[in-house]
Length: 172
Image 1 (cartoon, rainbow, N blue to C red):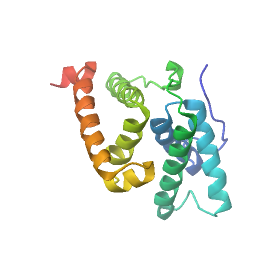
Image 2 (cartoon, helix red, strand yellow):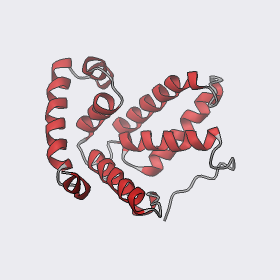
Image 3 (cartoon, rainbow, N blue to C red):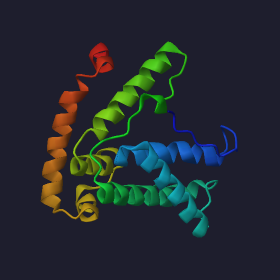
Image 4 (cartoon, helix red, strand yellow):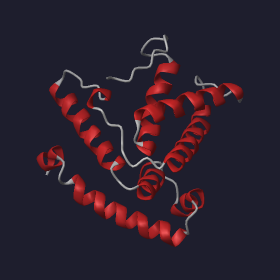
């Protein structure tokens, strides 16, 4: 069953774009679409309470910070190792090249959420969202040296696994 969000604003509205961005970000951290949707709705409520506008590009860093912190909190709270990755949550374009790229993106995200919790959160923070390892270590409650070591191990492991994804074999 596909998870849908009816926000009634049309495909190009700021709210629709926010949901797309927010769901992708939360899903990367949590690995469960229902929980990612709950986090997205929670952050939207908090944005309304703090008078943060979706329409203002200046608000995007604060929105991203809220999403990341709330997603990390949910991931650590639930410690749910089983990802909810039902295939219907992935929209596939009709164009062959776009479809291949969408499948590759899906495979990368599924690979990322298959990581154990701490390496997944650390790689999301440092490898994707650009946080310095020391800042990520503080956020996750680990030492900076452990964060650097774990990040290096995670990158090495991901590089090996990415080579196994069919599209990367085709690109080499």
